[in-house]
Every structure is written in C-alpha cells, then in structure tokens.
Amino acid sequence: MLDIKFIRENPDVVKQALTARNQEKDHSKVDELLQLDQERRALLTETESLKAEQNKVSKEVGKMKAKGEDPSAIFKEMKSLSQKTTEIDKKVGGLSQKIELIWHAIPNNPHESTPVGGESANEIVKEWGKAPKFDFKPAPHWELGEKLDILDLPRGTKISGSGFPVYKGKGALLERALIAFMLDLH
Image: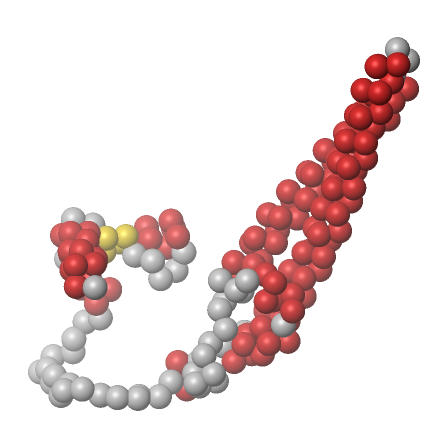
C-alpha cells in the first residue's frame, strides 16, 4: 500500500503508475483521495484549535472558582465548543472511512522494468528445464483443486474478493506445510 504522504507529494507519479497498469479510469480516485484527505486535515486542524480553546476556558473556570465567581456563562461556551468538537469528530470519522476505502483500492506502483500493458505485454525473462508434453489437455490447478475438494474459490471470493481461495481438508494441510517449510528453510 502506498504511503498517503507519497500520494500527496507525487500524485502524477501515482497516476502514471495507474496508466502503466491500464487503470487510467482510476485517476479520479487519486484526485478524490487527495480532496478528502485535505478536507479531513482541515477538520483535524479545526478540532485541535477547538480543543485548545476548551483547555483555555477550563483554566479560566478554575481561576473563577478560586476567586469565588460564578462560571455558569463559561459553561455554556464550553458546551457549545464540546458540541462543535463532537460534530467535527463525526465528520472526520466518516471522511477517514471513505479515505481508507479509496486508499486501499489504489495499487502499488509497478517497477520501472515492468512492461507497460496487461498480461500480453509480459516478457519471458528466463526458462529453466524442458516443458513437459502431455498426450491429454492438462486441467488448470483451480479445476483440479475443486475436483479434489481442497479448494473453494467461490467461498474465497465471497470472503475476501477475487483471487483468494479457501483451502479445505488436505489443501489446508498442504498450504500450512508449505508455509512451515519456507519458515524452516529461511
């Protein structure tokens, strides 16, 4: 995930990266993110100044009480400041949620060496060994996984989105064994 500060300082770089990923339509997401972030930051500045004012008024109340004066007029002022702060905090919370949704939808920038375009633009950099030849058409791994009842792709899509399978039974054991193997190896 890209740092929000990086997006703020380099919106054109982020948009160029989206173009390199064939996602020009998402340029508006960057603009919307920056606009919402600016609103949120302005509201945070306002709420901080209101809280500073509340602290100042609270000290005045203490001084008034020490002198024996009636601070009821100041309490009304503090109540209105508190209400304003609460309203702004709610707005900030709503903006933060919108920002998170958009921010998580912006992908990382591809490396400069990555070819521009989709899968068809990918280049074979290195091949190792000989590709096996079969006298039948091999099935893709996702079909084999579902036939063996070790993968559940529809459930994975429902839980976390496209590209995330749910491993079942021996598939889950295999996945865990591979993780343990890599942890032990490295």
